[in-house]
Image (cartoon, rainbow, N blue to C red; front, side, top):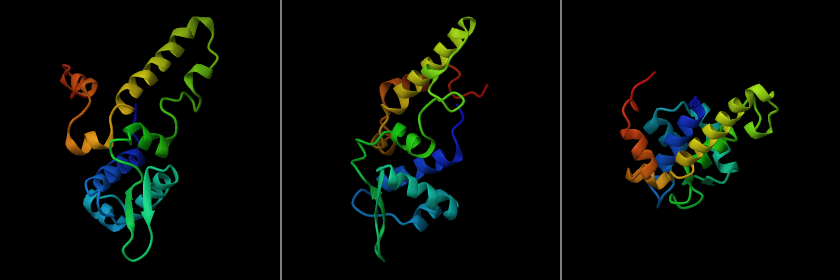
Length: 151
């Protein structure tokens, strides 16, 4: 799986905002604190607002805040807000593809990949990223030999 720069920036922005739950964070602050290009960030924030992940407060004291509690926003919510559904194959859900009988297991592995991604992305909240208390399934995977090794 390739995580796009847009998703990476969106995650970093949401986590930064979540660290200040009682105030708003400006686009400029996000750009500076997370080293995200301002023009690029503007479109990402707009998508997050449209997807109801973030709320915006307009005016001179305005900025961005979470639209819901950090405990109820998942990593999957952010990924879907920016890049759409998880684990599409050629832009389609894997279960809707038509494979020849000899390749049915290829389709099955794409469905399994999506299920695996869901088990991490849907079970990890923004609060977990802020507090550093990741779900057990994520911690288990992080402890596996080679987890931190690129192949």
